[in-house]
Length: 320
Image (tube, rainbow, N blue to C red; front, side, top):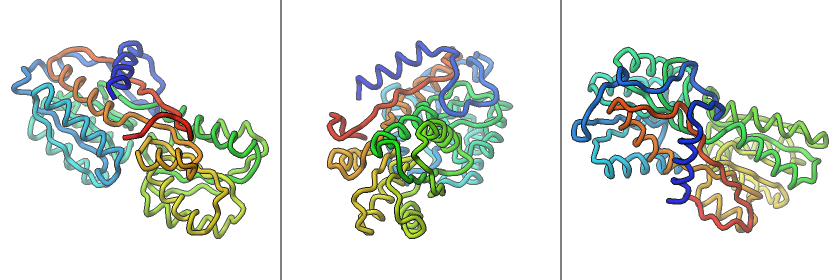
């Protein structure tokens, strides 16, 4: 983990003002003293509004936030939006009313939570976004892996697994999030290079395992000859795997995104073909580090690309 975190920090330093990871905010700028003033570590209070804690990826991210806050000696309040934009908007409004020093936001919906960012801007509270960003408002720093690239990597793995021909399906995440849109964009761009592969179905399962199980069951009935599945996150990949196993279709290749321990173990066992691993814990840690800097009036990078890691059957990686 330390090695990956060092890589992430080094990437942050080198990225500077370079854009390109996921859907970037409509307006971004280096944080300045006016975006939160200065504060000592003893008085710094960070609010972390996370889209959901019903997903190992965001649990790992929340753990990273809390670990770094403890390390730096600052207070942090973690609020679970339960994947409901209205709930999360109210939570951010509460954080603003509490006059927190900075807000770390993992938005449940990129457009709806733009309102929250704009309200924080008017209150002169700096905002850091993690994994997903917003379409409007001034985000001081956006930390995420490159979701377009993740989609391309997943497509490349399916092309390789199927020898460039066959029927595949895509399980989409929460529609309206930048991560969903960018992963689909990257996947579509890359899969189009294989003329022998046809995407026969594309349906949302909202990044949820149980929804993916049900969706995959229906897809298997409608398209019994599919040979590959791209799931935009591991929770959906694991749900799809359960449906595929229940149907007795062992030949179907599955590629997911995240790097969850369970999914990585399935890749190592040959139950999934590949996984594109991210760094949620490290992203959470860096989010706090930069939120604290912003609270002190220091400058941070506008955007940070968190490295992706390809996990195949023989890859020495255990996941988060």
